[in-house]
Amino acid sequence: MGRVRDTGLIQDEPLIFEQGGEGRKGYSLPRWDVEKVEAQNLIPSYLLRKELEGFPQLSEIDVVRHFTRLSRWNYGVDSGLYPLGSCTMKYNPKVNEEIARMSGFSDIHPYTPEDLSKGILKLMYELQGFLAEITGMDDVTLQPAAGAHGELTGLMMVKACLQGRGERRKKVLVPDTAHGTNCSTSAIASYQMIEIKSNEKGVIPLEKVAEMMDEEVAAIMVTNPNTLGLFEEHLSKIAEIVHRKGGFVYCDGANLNALMGIVKLGDLGVDVVHINLHKTFSTPHGGGGPGAGPVAVKKELAPYLPIPVIEKHGEIYRLNDDRPHSIGKIKAFYGNFGVLIKAYAYILSMGAEGLKRVSEMAVLNAYYLMKRLKDYYYLPYDRPCMHECVFTDRFQEKFHVSTLDIAKRLIDYGFHPPTIYFPLVVKGALMMEPTETESKESIDRFIETMIEIAKEAEENPDLLRQAPQRVKVRRLDEVLAARKPKLKWTIDK
Ligand SMILES: *Cc1c(COP(=O)(O)O)cnc(C)c1O
Image (cartoon, rainbow, N blue to C red; front, side, top):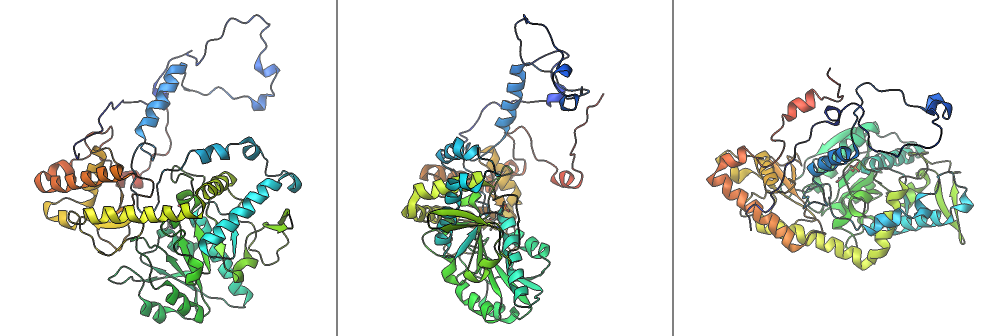
């Protein structure tokens, strides 16, 4: 344990443009025994590709090897533990992918008439019901394509509702422990973002909310559990204060795998919450999507939901566009339907008890990790965590070893590093979420590696400062990459 377990071939791979040779093809067909016809005579010329200068010409095996090798440079949840905090990166059952690919789902066109799409509408309607039940809210839209998109949808509904009351409020309160997207959302929804400083326990202080809340504030956006992995324990009291002044409580519920079956956010006074199906409900997160960020609301905000809404009349499911107060459409058609199918299948297969167990395991695993590592890494908020926990590099500072060095060294041991330097309220943060899907052995392996790294920091800090060594690409100049990105590859002649 603790020793290197993953070693192997690190294959180099040039760009595909640098490979191959004139006239090589991906196939060889037998000599034809029919008359040859030029493609131009069969296919309209505007559909035919022009000759591309420098276009690579390779045999089939070279193409297959090129992409297979590149794919092995990647690290993902299917290759090992992926302990990113704030963005749950867990294993998702493959069976739900199979279900989403069933032809009745995957072949249906968004313009299929309503009476030929009853099953689809039923699935979406029932999924809305499940999400409303899990969050303790009244109504749901499935349209938003991501968490941040859900946030914007939520704030647009709040704004529309306030305008309906004849009010124009200017500000949104956002604690420093919120996800970064909350700040961007407030700005894009044309609100002025006012920051609330969290207290020494890592949560929002009630007095500050009372002090800052006034008739100018449209909403407070609370991430719960917050980005320190802590439960916002005063949320219902915060909600009371905000409601008394006519504001709304927005909850960022992206990481619902800490709460399902244990806490209903609606019971805590939340008016609107988004959920990341691509974190909690069986769509892999990362890799560019697609995702889905459904938004659940209380009755008061329901008239503002995006159109069309799905309604059930007896046994008939219908789409309704006739909603005068709606904020309109926020996504083409009905959202990313493939993601919705996976969430639906996942919820049905887990059942209420299963979802609760997910949350219990997510929290237990994080707490176990926290307890076992806290003698080796500084824990700025030493209190029970939810689905993730945050350490820092304070113990390693005296050896001139930083969070970045620790993260890079993990790569040498075959692990994806955790989230680093976030949340911003913690200096040198190392934020970890093992998730509910890891076995005890796999979490132990990670813990023992982290302990080994803590020892190395003391005994041989250069090892960390020079990490990673056992990879194809060493430390990159991240500043250069951000300031002078090379977005286009040109063929040098
Ligand atoms: C991931 C996450 C988001 C943003 O979700 P996207 O789908 O990436 O837009 C927002 N808030 C929290 C707390 C998150 O973890």
